[in-house]
Image (cartoon, rainbow, N blue to C red):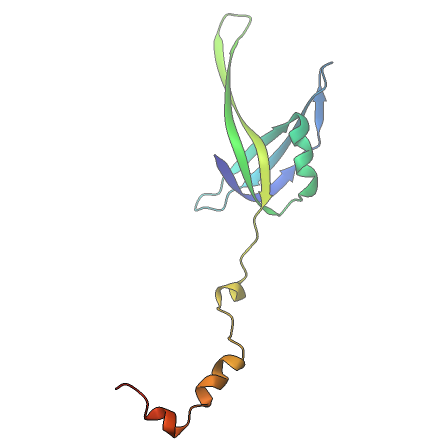
Length: 125
């Protein structure tokens, strides 16, 4: 699965417990009729992937949905979901000029101008 949008916030890397578990969060705002602010977490060595990105950049993040069950001390079962990123890519904004086809070089038109009247008689119709 993927989430695409503009980076709104990049958090600092957090370290938890004695085992050195690392987590870093990024918030991406989707660009749709009703924009959503999606928080994606990167864990362990994937936290370093965010080092090359800044607020305002358009990105595409490959994600996995994670879910877990937890039983509280009162015996009630609770369920939690998280969105975990494992790849992030820069998405280039297409400039309006890129939609215009390139102009052919002048040499492409020279052969059409080299026709003389004798060549005109050789046409099959």
